[in-house]
Length: 316
Image 1 (cartoon, one colour):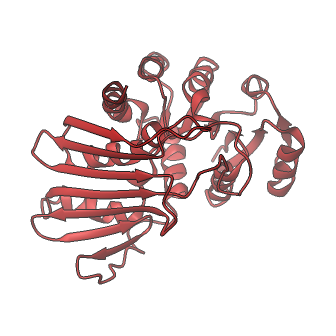
Image 2 (cartoon, rainbow, N blue to C red; image 1 turned 90 degrees about the vertical axis):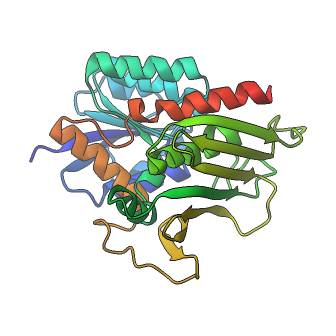
């Protein structure tokens, strides 16, 4: 089996989660790593045994030993860098969000269509075993969502990443964190979103973003979703998904799942791993090998960004 050679751009906290995942996938070799800080990037490369280090994505794209790229770079660079990868003839997986300007995401989808390359966006909730377990009940016609109630809570009043290091960019509740739930709701409801409303709290004086947000969604089949997001919450942290359906209630948090009575549901046999990032990367690699559209392709997730665009217009 010829190895698929991957370059990773963005060697920060999330990039390293991908490097940990890629180590577990047969037939994959990380041949290049790209980072903003050369010394820190060299440290990451040494840790994972990666031979090539650079601060230039273009340098990696020009290499003959790179077949595909995973982008874990700042949000504002996602669309342009995804386009650059496709134009260089490389398959690409870009971390969420695909874009923070709709027309840029639409340009990516058009470029993918023209090139025929694999282009995927990191909507990890599609792959978490907890959500996969619920999805199987939905596909089997055993469970139908009436409402999803989702809380996405962080404590992030300063611009720090998951490793406690200063960020070079500003995170965003709407274009980044809400994207997970907006996509997941339509995916699990198996119905497009037809109504969307949003409210936001005060704008942070330094970061220039809303620190609290409330979003309402309705799918064409009548299912509704209520999403609350905050960067002001002091705990517990993370995202909690409550699925309220016609035959049960389920509460998912990343890779854990309980029913409405707080009884644990075993999801350990749902897939080959309990790590959603690993499962996401496995799908990327498999789609390249099999020459097919991946779950979470840029075309599949574009409707999510169309909804976010409409919400941004409302808020402005």
